Length: 573
Image (cartoon, rainbow, N blue to C red; front, side, top):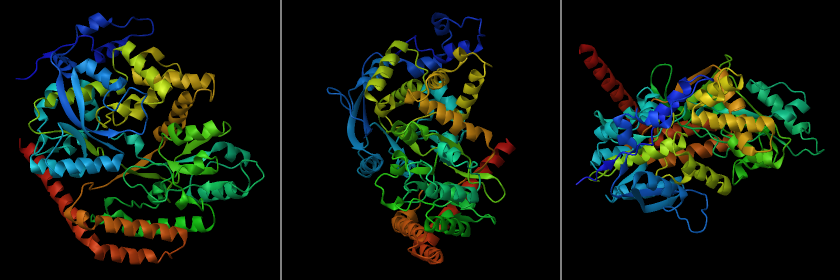
């Protein structure tokens, strides 16, 4: 028999928050008691606590953080709190530390048909699990037990997130949501160096060259030594789908090149972005920069790509909007004189800022077919998502978790049962807009959503005591400069036409990726001429690339045909 679910009344957070938002500065928001009376049955199902304990076996990705003595990966302040709210006992069927080991362990579970009750999988693994019939159809379960918060977040993707986790109208996984703001790569610059050398902000490729040259030659840190770096870089050159520290994706995008992504060319044909003439032009530019000493000459040697940023030697690097959280907070901790600013650069030849967008989702929470309590997985996701988004009404207990984070440096999300974060696709733009409204006195700070209010408080801490509390510095600088640039800059957004895998990728992919990485690096370092790119393209095609391209083309056209068929059916109706 199914365990009965008991409603826990003090969980109404969304209605309470709505009341707070609607109340003016001189009005009183609805009391918790009156808010509880408005609770919808769906929210009761989403957050209700089981009478009898439910056991859930999961695959767990172990974080890098180290817990206090007495705590363990499955018994710590976060896990105990979530269990107290749900009465769901989470047991780690297996653990793996790091992204790659976790993916391998999940794959082993799939190959051996020995799934835990729930785990997070990637796109290819989801497809295989659906094909094999090993995971539950969650369509009805999510409809009944999914919280309105999570449903709203999925809706912010225009239906793309849930569609990506579905097949034939059935939902087989609960997807993460990629935040739009995480896709663009910005140019982060030592503003104090720019000011010292009286240089204008870089906008174009030529501007970046001039600034990098000055940072190398004109002693921007004033120590009398030629020991600074113009532009730091990532050993593998680009990240492809989602940017990170030191990736050169923005330089390629300025040439309308999108390496490691499947795109449509001007004729409508599917093409692999790493083999286009535009990619060759971008490589030639980077090779020229490296030859002239504008790019850190030691970038291929670093164990951690952010080393020159942390050491205070780098004057510019590429990275997403959130770089003040890391590594820039560490840079400022080492040298409080460091002032970093973000710029939407380089622009393309037409003066536009072009960026490749990450997929809407890339990981999925799945449930073993036959697990007695699939709704428990949804309820856990509801509960920790509400906590992560500062919507949890249990303020005293949440305060204890905040204290735990402050004392240990461990964020609660590190010990959520599943490595699956969900937010509004436009969350960063929303937060930035709310913050600007509050900072300019157009709305009362008290009317902000809890997550925006926390950001506002941190921003004000930084404003009152600059660089005294790095938590405040992280928020203020990430939003003021990172998010601020994104919201004020017109962006040309390019999306891939295909993100999945094919049989050919499984067969030839590793070899072709190695060939690509080595060729790109050798060209930039000057160990191979730019003409080697043409040889690379020919070899890539011959060694399996053409086979893969045909497979991708077929799948893209099949998807288009299906979409057209559904559209025609809807039109007939």
